[in-house]
Picture 1 (cartoon, rainbow, N blue to C red):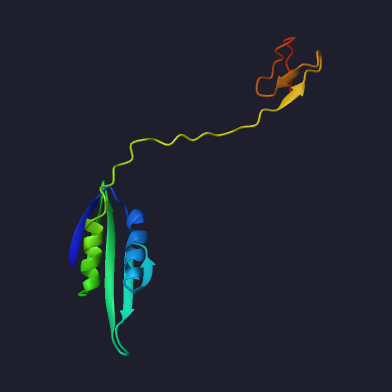
Picture 2: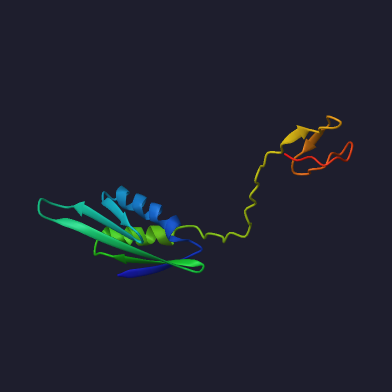
Length: 128
């Protein structure tokens, strides 16, 4: 079994990459939680199996590759060749849009926001 530490990658980043790479090698792939299994028929009664375990840690993902095929070597080389991933430093800004409802003031007919509750024109209190 070989192990790799990939900095700033997570399981969610690596599972699709591992899956695609194994499919290119001719494997039928199944994913279950943090495990990727690949099976490739090599003959009538024989097959080749590869199992990859992925474990997330702070700032890295540990990848354990189990199997005795050349595909394991190719997969390890592919994962080692991935470009370094920079950690996310920018925070996402979530913008929520809200609707402002305005009604006419019962005294002066100016439009008043229900959130304000007070007419900007005449100063009357408005209830919605």
